[in-house]
Length: 203
Image (cartoon, rainbow, N blue to C red):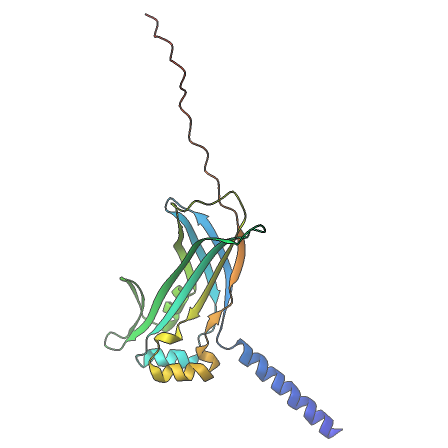
C-alpha cells in the first residue's frame, strides 16, 4: 500500500511539474479588436505573460530582445481561394542601458525609456492604435477573420542564445494566433449631384 501511495504522489508531482512547464514561456492574447479611424483600421490588443527569469537576466546583461507582433486579415471564400487584403508585422526591441540604468522599448525611430523592467513589460503587453489596414484598401461588405499573435524573434539573438533557444522553453516565448471575426463599417454613399437643369431664378 505504501508503494502504491508513493507512486501516486510521484505521479502527481510529475503532473504538476509538467503543467508548470507547459505554461512557462507562454503568451496569452487576452483581447483583440479592430476599430475604424481616419487612416484606416487600427488594432488594439492585450497580452498576458509572466516574463521568464532567464530572459530578464539576459536583458540586464546587455542582450537585446526583439518581439514581433503579427497581424493578418482574411476573407474566407467557399467558391475560391481565401482573400488576404492585409498582413502586417511590427518589431519592438527591449534593451537595458547600464550607464543610464533604464530599460528601453524601440520601434523604428520611436523610443520609450523606463525605470524598471516591469514598467517596460506593462507597455509591451498592451498594443494600442496599431494601423494594420490602410484606408486605401478596399474591403467588401462581408465578414472577415482577423488574427494577431506575439512572439520573441530568436533568429536575432546572439549565436549562443540561439542554441539555448533550441532546448529551453523559456526562449520559445510566443502566443498562439488569436482569431476573431470582423465586419468593416460601410461608409455612406457620396451624394449624387442632380443632372436636371435648374429652374431659372424668378425676377
